[in-house]
Image (cartoon, rainbow over the protein chains, first blue to last red):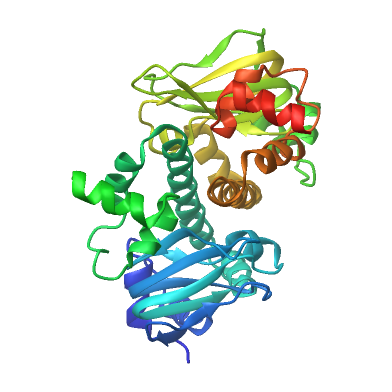
Length: 191
Length: 191
């Protein structure tokens, strides 16, 4: 189902739209209710959509050839999530997105986004800026992986994702930090 | 100095502009000639600009508290480079950008970009798409750091930066891969 117009304010905080624009945008967004354990996107599926997280918690992970999971990111309230490499090129996902705490997300397709950009140019500006922030965050993450100790990255993790502790399992955090769960326990004891 | 209109084709390959638009865009871009060893951006400087690399090779690196260098990225022909976290927020650079092979770059300020977006909307689309690609590339890099061996990352490095070998020193590559130069030598012998 389409989302309610009143929910647009939550997503596009500082923007204002005409009633017609609001209806148009809302018609492109679909609300999805997820239960903990649900899979939103499976690896090897074609990726047509990205998702706005209204509440709850999701995790994007990659399974390597040896079957080991690597967590790319978590998404909490007000984050957008997808397998972006696949989303931008409409190719197959290499990642899986699972719900790790009951969530409400709003889905929008790439095709709908292109419609929105064409009809409402301020949305292109909005998403360009979102993308800039996300890019800067990834830049920071790459640097932190290269230059920080696991302990420093553990601390940074909780500033990136405040209040996430109750949603995530130890192996989620360890696979995000690129360390073993044993190393994670050691770091926790030290702190 | 402003760049010549004919150079716009190189940067904005698939776009076409009116003569007036071309003049306007060219007036916002400044050509800079760099010699190997020159520093384009110093850590702790306020960042107002990003740079299009016409030819040559640049390297962005970060120096940690212990004085160790970490290479975030290289930029060769047709790449854009800056300290993007700082550029998007007009804050101080945490990174340094040096020229590692004589280069010609075109500089543009954030303020000029905002002018261009307002006057020529197709440029906002152009840069949004660039940003999407760069974001997807960083996503891939984070996953590769988490899940691939140093040997696999070494191979991936040369597919990301073909023909870069003659421009880069061993410690540049090692600090990009997050390994020691000794490990790099070992990997090279194995391959």
